[in-house]
Amino acid sequence: MKQWIKIACSILILVCFSCASHQSPDYEKIAYKITYQTAKKLRREKGLFLCGTGGGMIDDIKIMSMAFHFYRPLAIEAFRSLLLYAVEEYLAAINGSEEVRPYLHNYPFTPNNIEIVIFLRNRDNSSLPPGEIDVAAARFGKFTYSADDVEATKQGKSWSKDVHIETFEEAVQICRRQEKERSFSTQATETSSSIS
Image 1: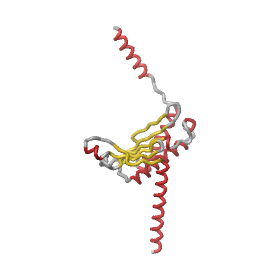
Image 2: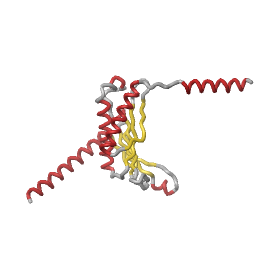
Image 3: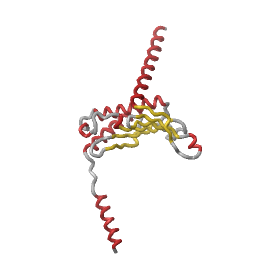
Image 4: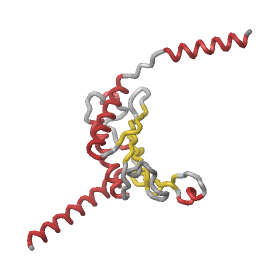
């Protein structure tokens, strides 16, 4: 009889808790609004397809995060540029919102406060071959590029390993240098064409 009472009480407690409506704090709603607006922009401008969101939002907003699929293989240089663009757009949207500002753990939000992960897939949604970089993540101020481990794949296991890690600042410097080189190369080509 005591066991039935315990079971009945447990069920009643579960029902009461599951029926209680969870009301998200206003700052969570504001954060998700910013996240979805940014994701929509990134899809339109860069072809990134949102596949997950999250964050650390107990008491205030400490972390905001998004995950995407991108359906085209990329070299690390293009992957870095895409990831950096997504990080900068997300930070600009967060820091540019006066509505969310009072709820941010720290203002301005920095690369340490956001997480963006991009999963590369082939156009037909198949996985990239082992050894090719298929995940880029911006987490806590670091950019990490990962690939399925070739040896593990040969053994029928699915392990990912980090191929390259750099700080946010290093990624910015590399991208800016590459932009200058492309700009210089374009100007040189245009100059030689106009001379001919």
